[in-house]
Each structure stands twice: as C-alpha cells, then as structure tokens.
Length: 188
Image (cartoon, rainbow, N blue to C red):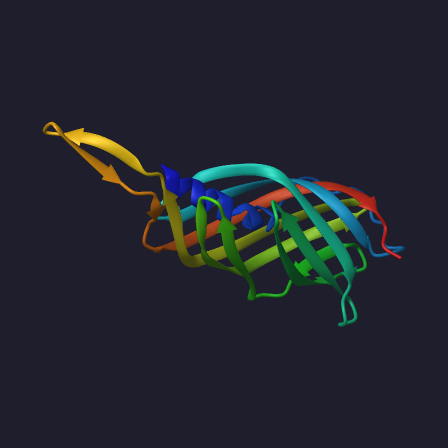
C-alpha cells in the first residue's frame, strides 16, 4: 500500500528515537560526549496503517547541555533530526526529560505532511564508548501521498485518473525503538 510507505518514510526520524541492548563498563571522563552510530529497530503502530518493524542506522550526538548534569541528545536518520534533553548520572545512565516534542515536516517525492512525535518515556546508558537507548513516542499528524496517474478500461470505455495527491489522512499511534552502537568520535 503506497500510503503505508509514506508512514515508513515519515517514521524514519522516529527510528532515531529509541533503543535497548547490553551496556558495558563505566567511563565518565568526558561523560561519553561525541557521536555514536546506533543500529536501531523500531516498532511502528500508527493507524490507519498496518503495524510494522523497521531497522536502520541512527546517528546520535551527545553534547553538553545548559543544565548541569544534563546532555543534549541529537538523533538523525534519513534526513530527519530531533534534539532531546537527558539527565546523565555519574554511572552513565540517561533519563530523558518528558514530555518532549519532535515535529517532523515530511517532504518526500511520494509523501508530504506533518507529524508530531511526543516523547513519553526514554532512558539509556553511555559507558566505555558504547551508547544504548530505549525511547517511546506517541505520534499524531497528517500525511498525503502521491497517486500515480493511470488509465483503465471499464465496460469498453477508457478512463484516466490523473496523477495527484491524496487528501491528508490523520494518523495516530506509537513508535517504540531500541538500539545501541559505538562512539565514532569525541567532541572538543
């Protein structure tokens, strides 16, 4: 279904929003600041589309935040990005500030619309150059998809449906993600 592919494209950012595998020993000399490449999997349950599971890479950058004891967490995937805030403990545990919003403007050749992802829960660990994240978002918004033009015959008459956009379809659901990955480099 073409509309389902639009949700897959729109949820690419949302793939960047969560994770969970094993964590290693503690290292807090630099607080784990830097860039990480995470291998992530997301469970997407957004109606009116069928549930799906998506896998992909997510670039995560941890930087110092303005609030002491916090880090800024930038998630990037497939051209979308989102910045979240998380408290960081001395042992490297991350507790994300909730609720937090990640608005997504979808502008693809076959899909367009606006999706708002509201972070409902999030935690992770940064230890010995390894980052794990586990995040859950509530998702709502609207999506339109491009429909290909086609000609068909019905009762010996030819009909042509022009190429165009579907009306905006309201979407609502959840995206839960889990993943982990190694640090790619420290920040100055």
